[in-house]
Length: 107
Picture 1 (tube, rainbow, N blue to C red):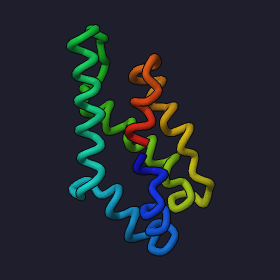
Picture 2: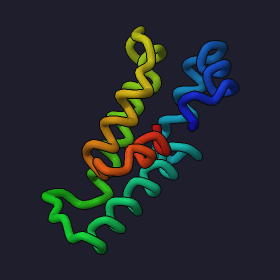
Picture 3: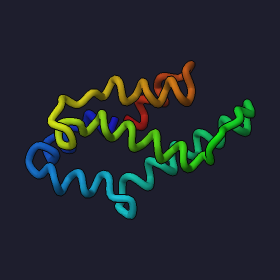
Picture 4: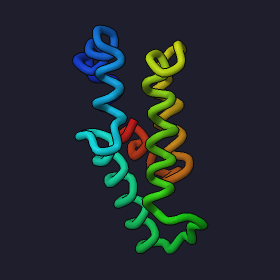
């Protein structure tokens, strides 16, 4: 899981501003991939079970990724302890309650 990677945590501790910029920059290498991954999961669920969304899948994926970033990178963004368990749970509960491993995959 990305959020628990030792190298990532080290980089966040050593160069927090630069690390957050790389991880959360919209045209950067990380955030767009996370959003695309979540959007694909949402679209897959829509095709399989047909849940009706009140927002576009990309918009919901973006919101979920940003919400999870606020928990995973809380130490850098808000001077709080990171909460990876809540981040994964937010996504799993919203997206696929019977598959908690989905939440862990993006946290």
